[in-house]
Amino acid sequence: MEEQIKSVFALQQQHKFGLRKTDAKTRIGKLRQLKQALENAEEEIFAALKNDLRKSRFETAVTELFFTYAEINHAIKKLRSWMKPKSAGRTMSNLFASNKIYYEPKGVCLIIAPWNYPLQLIMSPLISAIAAGNCVVLKPSELSGAMADVISKLISDNFDPKEIACFEGDVDVSTELLKLPFDHIFFTGSTAIGKVVMEAAAKNLASVTLELGGKSPAIVDETCDLQKAAEKIAWGKLVNAGQTCIAPDYVLIKENKLADFEMHYKAAVQKMFFSEAEINKNDYAKIINPKQFHRLNKLIEEALHDGAVLAFGGKSDEQDLTITPTLLISVAEGSAIMQEEIFGPILPVITYKNLQEAIDFVNRKEKPLALYIFSDNKQNQNKIITETSAGGTCVNDVLVHIGNPNLPFGGVNNSGIGSCHGIFGFKTFSHERSVVFQSNWGLTKMIYPPYEKKMSLLKWLKKLM
Image 1: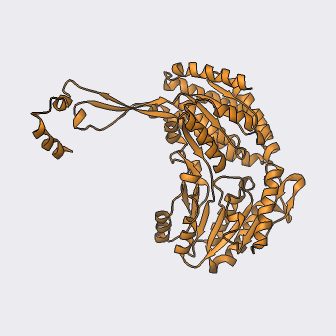
Image 2: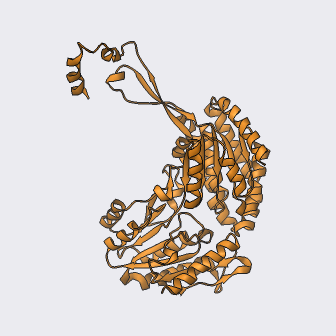
Image 3: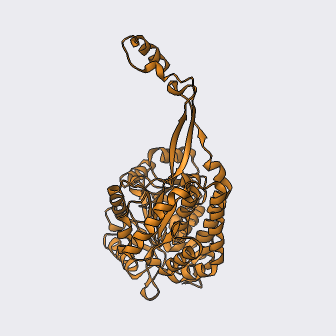
């Protein structure tokens, strides 16, 4: 595998110089080729995600396939305008010059994808990389092995490895890939592994995009429609059985609204994911593997030991890796479940006396990938947005910001570096190159030496700055 990786990398290093010269028409053709390949493989994709995560056909279509198709369509529609050099303003040093910003491909890029949305989270950056004119090496997660097989076959059947290649395998494959001097690395996964990726990239001074995660809070005040808020939080928390990087990780709610929220949340969960008092496994995904299953059960056990109250849920079935939707109240801030990203169908609820107390709670933790605000009070909305920091924010909804390619998606500090989707993804995989076309009337000669007779010029230049 090591020699194969090096061989493909060498091929892509040679090919990137020709690929950088491709025009919009050629790149759009490749995007259409990718979309057609995905459409041809739809049944295999549905089957793979059913195998890996027990995803329903509908959930797979909406969160994986249709999301990807929308990204491709958006890129096809906008690519010509993205690729055009952009005019920039002038200064005294180039008063008569033409100033442009050119978007050139970074070169050979590595995309390392996670297991939770194994199609969407490898295809989205791939779309941007193709649009920007790069060669790409893909590394899908071995934990979603059925989907990794589908992706590998799809790529090998439709693209030359000197342009796009896919390597399956475990951490040893990732380690070999990270030794190579890629021009850009795009990683989606945990914060801990993100640090490893960034350290490896630093050895080759490769630029990185890190899509990580963290504890994304939902702040609920007393002015919102609590039933709607509970329903939206329940959907955002439990889609893919909570294995979503921007799922609401915990709820902060005014203490006098706790009982009502508990009632509405339970009703929403039962409506969406239960049938005849049993969890509907046709609509409700499973936990990816036994390791994660046991980790999540341990978080529940430790939270209860630390004084949390089980409002409902908490049942689990190791045979089919199912943990029912679980609501915990009176959770201790120091409990393990409030220290690490949950990444499962468990929702802790913390009460607050006043809004500032909720804001301070959020700010004591690392900056989250997402923050959700449920409030009909504009002043409260603005106060939370102004006094907190997060990768992205939704007011009176959850998750939906990721579906708009006109918005940048990404984290901040511990929850990520850089952004993706739409033009933001195109720029991530491009170098913004400054180009000055100087005219015959350039003024820079005025500041050439000798300087002895030009000291008076400094006062004039200072006034023009």
